[in-house]
Amino acid sequence: MPETNLLKNGTSAVPTVQTPLPNYIDNEWQKSTANELLDVTNPATGEVLTRVPLSPTEEVHQAATAAAAAGHEWRRTPAVQRIQYLFTLKNLLEENLDDIAKTITLECGKTLDEARGEMRRAIENVEVACGIPTLMQGTNLEDIATGIDEFMIRQPVGVCAAIAPFNFPGMITFWFLPYAIACGNTYIVKPSEKVPITMQKVFQLLEQTGLPKGVVNLVNGGRETVDAILTHPDIRAISFVGATATAKAIYAKAAANGKRVQCQGGAKNPLIVLPDADPEFTINATAESAFGCAGQRCLAASLTLTVGAARNWFTEAIADTATNRVVGNGLEDGIEMGPVITPESRKRIEGLIQAGTDEGAQLLVDGRYPSIPGGENGNFIRPTILNNLNPQGEIAKTEIFGPVLGLIHVETIDDAIELINSGSYGNMACLFTRSGASARKFRYEAEIGNIGINIGVAAPMAFFPFSGWKDSFFGDLHGQSWDAVDFFTQKKVVVERWV
Ligand code: NAD
Image (tube, rainbow, N blue to C red):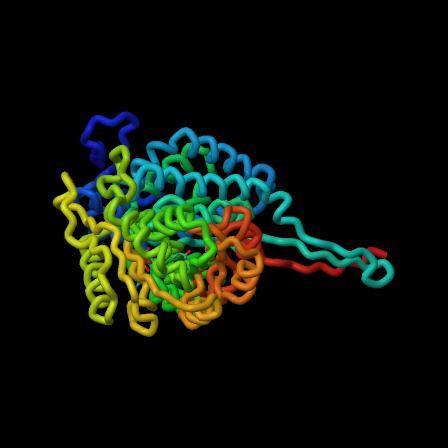
């Protein structure tokens, strides 16, 4: 297969990639037999980087068969030996961090700093999973009756799979894969067809760790590929991250097929600003949350609810900050915000901005149709502010997934919390204040899984679970940390008498 340079500008550590992208099954790079291939494009330039196959059912079957066969030996490999591969992977990820970050920027559009930050969280998850010999321990009680002991041990589930979204091409697989394999499972990854190159890089590193055949597998694809994963009898557990509509459908189908399943969905994340908040800090944190990664984080702020007098200092200052944000190609120095993922996404976001104004909002900063030097074919939208957004309208409830912040002004913190709790999502909410009592009230009453107090992006570190609620999550156990250990193990309880 031909290999091409992705960067045309002579930058060092140039990422390279094959066309079309191969799958990685049973430790072999295999050309897919897919009839359908999609272009993978650079969102900043519109340039085609490579082509991705939409792998047919048969290729999922090959991966599942390889993973099932590998599982026999892998679960018998002591946990202390299994984690040695993760220590090697951590070092390889550190050494190749810049190359992977450039790849993320090229195919996803975010800035290099954002891409590096994404990979730091990925590495952190590998580090946490290296603790599996401790984290995977069971419990026991001697003499539940005289001479009888009872204990609980954890065993791997079997073949597990991840289905990933476009917005974190590197990190999201790492919420799952390191824990899964450290616990003795074998694994299949289906990346987003919009950003499949980063996983090629990651799997090249996984190959270098010397993991036994079939322990980790990569199958590129779209709906047919996902359907094959959801119905394959050898695949026992599925982790999905993506839009709520997809999450709901995948949760239902996987559960109907008897799988263990965790599905993280979309969001509409509000920030509350109280009058006593530190203005400069709050504005900077809000801008970073709303416009970082071009608003394409599941933890991006989409609404700000200013309480009382906060409206006066917040509105003008956030408009200034939005207007002055430096937008362009994320590979260039000094760029603070890149493009959104596709032309379709840009058009959808432009339509939602229009819908917000149709519902009565004031278009305080209009980021549509910007002129970005060199970005004529890119999917650019500048930061946009919809002031006085109708709290009962559709746009106050719809995930925009772009650099658009809606402002709603309320009288009390109770009004703000009531509005937040009336929404259907529960991914993240943040409060800016200097009052401990207000912070406690908010933390206690908000029906939201990830809470920030004077934090704009309340992303849990790898040693805590990533905890969405309501329509932002379907399932029980979340990604990362001890939830991941619970998800990737099944409990066995033994009652034993030897006398
Ligand atoms: P998406 O739902 O369109 O796609 C996610 C994955 O599902 C992809 O691999 C895609 O190939 C597959 N897919 C899409 N439609 C499918 C269908 N009908 N049948 C089977 N498979 C299908 O999501 P996206 O646009 O890639 O990602 C953005 C969304 O992900 C946003 O809604 C964002 O909030 C959400 N997200 C949530 C979290 C979280 O932790 N809650 C994290 C990141 C992203």
